[in-house]
Length: 339
Image (cartoon, rainbow, N blue to C red; front, side):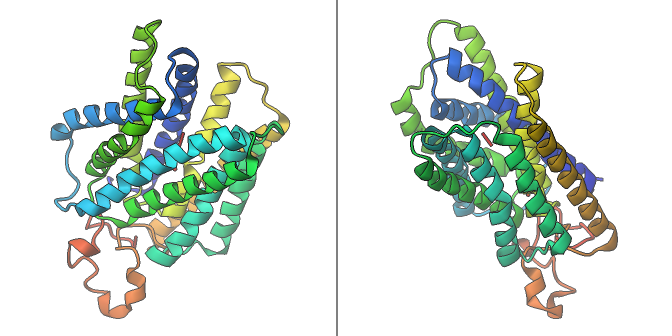
């Protein structure tokens, strides 16, 4: 059951919804705590690190293998880069266009990277589904024509954020690290990398409403950080990277839904249509993943990424060593995102 495609798709979906909820809570923190986005992200990583480190001895390890230190450092730096670049891009280009560029180009970059480096093939139907999901994202998010003061610069930085997100997704899809340890090391490296920027921005919240701020920061560290990243990395041990990136588009969907339900923001027909398209794309790719699981086709499962390029000589030895195994070596079938 632990290798079930359905279970791991659910892990990624829960992670994405948690990130959407985290963005909603972060907006409250920006308004009432005096903290900026980089400082909030730093406290998220620090809180997630503390919580997951405390729970780690009680969490069963999926594999005895460990990623190389350099891989874990790259993972943490990628997490720090895409979060920081995303917030800088919003300041330059505006929320709507930056969200579309960052989250919309993510699945495209991941699909290209997964094909080149992991040997994952989407097929024509999968490619059409990815394109449709990006179109749905555009309809969902671009509810107003407003842009920031420097839209072109914002788009450029948003692409840097998307590249960082794609790199983290592909790295965790390819490596043999335990998902809990991958999240732990990512939080540690990310927090250290963000500390100087967060200190410059201002690390300490206002004294007014300090209790509420601490509670919200604790929530940020627990749910959209420790829980969400552990689940996302767990899902990537089974689900194809591109599929994971499309399922992760549930994040803006959750954010828009919360805005409509809690803040009574107006949901336009175009936004509703975009949300429906996104949900349909997620469902279509989920069905495709489950078919691949049952037929043994595609790239779902634990086969080491890229092994299809090695020819039939590897057919009987695809689990011959740590560098050729995913976190779950016995998966029968061959082997994706925030804000």
